[in-house]
Image (tube, rainbow, N blue to C red; front, side, top):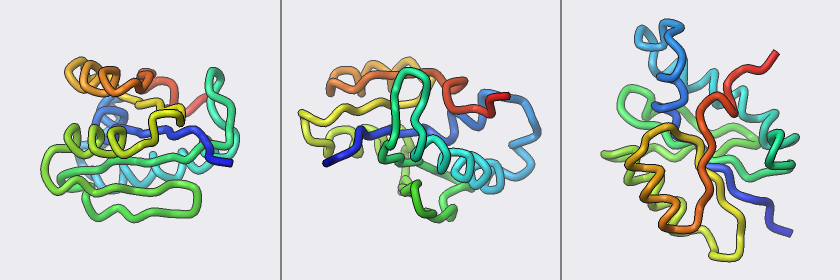
Length: 126
Protein backbone atom coordinates (compact mmCIF):
# COMPACT_ATOMS: atom_id res chain seq x y z
CA UNK A 1 0.00 0.00 0.00
CA UNK A 2 1.31 3.42 -0.97
CA UNK A 3 0.92 6.20 1.56
CA UNK A 4 -0.34 9.67 0.56
CA UNK A 5 2.44 12.08 -0.40
CA UNK A 6 3.11 15.24 1.60
CA UNK A 7 5.53 17.70 -0.02
CA UNK A 8 6.80 20.50 2.21
CA UNK A 9 8.22 23.80 0.93
CA UNK A 10 10.98 24.18 3.54
CA UNK A 11 11.85 27.81 2.75
CA UNK A 12 8.23 28.89 2.89
CA UNK A 13 7.40 27.02 6.10
CA UNK A 14 10.60 28.06 7.91
CA UNK A 15 10.12 31.66 6.76
CA UNK A 16 6.54 31.77 8.07
CA UNK A 17 7.65 32.39 11.67
CA UNK A 18 10.16 35.15 12.57
CA UNK A 19 12.14 33.04 15.05
CA UNK A 20 15.67 33.89 13.89
CA UNK A 21 15.78 31.24 11.14
CA UNK A 22 17.73 33.63 8.88
CA UNK A 23 20.80 33.29 11.13
CA UNK A 24 20.97 29.53 10.45
CA UNK A 25 18.88 28.49 7.46
CA UNK A 26 20.25 24.94 7.37
CA UNK A 27 19.64 24.49 11.11
CA UNK A 28 16.07 25.75 10.75
CA UNK A 29 15.43 23.35 7.85
CA UNK A 30 16.92 20.46 9.86
CA UNK A 31 14.65 21.26 12.82
CA UNK A 32 11.64 21.30 10.49
CA UNK A 33 12.76 17.99 9.00
CA UNK A 34 12.99 16.46 12.47
CA UNK A 35 9.52 17.76 13.38
CA UNK A 36 8.14 16.19 10.20
CA UNK A 37 9.14 12.68 11.32
CA UNK A 38 6.12 12.69 13.65
CA UNK A 39 3.91 14.03 10.86
CA UNK A 40 5.05 11.17 8.61
CA UNK A 41 3.99 8.65 11.22
CA UNK A 42 0.80 10.22 12.58
CA UNK A 43 -0.36 12.54 9.79
CA UNK A 44 -2.13 15.87 10.16
CA UNK A 45 -5.63 16.74 11.41
CA UNK A 46 -7.11 16.61 7.88
CA UNK A 47 -4.63 14.09 6.49
CA UNK A 48 -4.30 10.88 8.49
CA UNK A 49 -0.95 9.09 8.55
CA UNK A 50 1.18 7.38 7.79
CA UNK A 51 2.40 9.67 5.02
CA UNK A 52 5.38 9.76 2.72
CA UNK A 53 6.96 13.11 3.54
CA UNK A 54 9.26 14.95 1.14
CA UNK A 55 10.95 18.15 2.34
CA UNK A 56 12.27 20.34 -0.48
CA UNK A 57 15.23 22.51 0.54
CA UNK A 58 17.20 25.12 -1.37
CA UNK A 59 19.99 27.67 -0.99
CA UNK A 60 21.91 27.54 2.29
CA UNK A 61 19.76 24.63 3.47
CA UNK A 62 20.69 22.54 0.42
CA UNK A 63 22.95 20.20 2.44
CA UNK A 64 20.29 19.04 4.92
CA UNK A 65 20.06 15.26 4.63
CA UNK A 66 17.19 12.79 4.72
CA UNK A 67 16.30 10.92 7.91
CA UNK A 68 14.07 7.87 8.36
CA UNK A 69 10.52 9.07 7.69
CA UNK A 70 11.45 12.24 5.80
CA UNK A 71 13.10 12.29 2.38
CA UNK A 72 14.90 15.55 1.66
CA UNK A 73 15.11 16.78 -1.92
CA UNK A 74 17.78 19.38 -2.52
CA UNK A 75 16.71 21.83 -5.22
CA UNK A 76 19.59 22.53 -7.61
CA UNK A 77 18.03 25.91 -8.44
CA UNK A 78 14.43 26.94 -7.76
CA UNK A 79 12.77 25.24 -4.82
CA UNK A 80 9.38 25.83 -6.44
CA UNK A 81 10.49 24.05 -9.61
CA UNK A 82 11.77 21.10 -7.55
CA UNK A 83 8.43 20.89 -5.71
CA UNK A 84 6.53 20.89 -9.01
CA UNK A 85 8.84 18.10 -10.26
CA UNK A 86 8.09 15.98 -7.16
CA UNK A 87 4.35 16.53 -7.58
CA UNK A 88 4.49 15.83 -11.32
CA UNK A 89 6.30 12.51 -10.67
CA UNK A 90 3.57 11.40 -8.24
CA UNK A 91 1.19 8.79 -9.71
CA UNK A 92 -2.16 10.43 -10.61
CA UNK A 93 -4.18 8.12 -8.36
CA UNK A 94 -2.06 8.80 -5.26
CA UNK A 95 -3.21 11.68 -3.01
CA UNK A 96 -0.68 14.52 -2.87
CA UNK A 97 -0.65 17.54 -0.56
CA UNK A 98 1.79 20.45 -0.72
CA UNK A 99 2.54 22.65 2.29
CA UNK A 100 3.19 26.24 1.17
CA UNK A 101 1.74 29.74 1.29
CA UNK A 102 3.33 30.73 -2.02
CA UNK A 103 0.44 31.69 -4.30
CA UNK A 104 2.22 31.04 -7.60
CA UNK A 105 3.41 27.63 -6.39
CA UNK A 106 -0.07 26.86 -5.11
CA UNK A 107 -1.47 27.49 -8.60
CA UNK A 108 1.21 25.32 -10.22
CA UNK A 109 0.65 22.28 -7.99
CA UNK A 110 -3.15 22.46 -7.92
CA UNK A 111 -3.00 22.34 -11.74
CA UNK A 112 -1.34 18.93 -11.18
CA UNK A 113 -4.20 17.80 -8.88
CA UNK A 114 -2.36 18.35 -5.59
CA UNK A 115 -4.11 19.92 -2.64
CA UNK A 116 -2.46 22.72 -0.68
CA UNK A 117 -2.30 23.45 3.03
CA UNK A 118 -0.65 26.42 4.71
CA UNK A 119 2.61 26.42 6.69
CA UNK A 120 0.86 26.53 10.08
CA UNK A 121 -0.38 23.02 9.38
CA UNK A 122 3.09 21.58 10.09
CA UNK A 123 4.55 24.16 12.46
CA UNK A 124 4.97 23.22 16.13
CA UNK A 125 1.65 22.49 17.71
CA UNK A 126 1.15 22.73 21.45
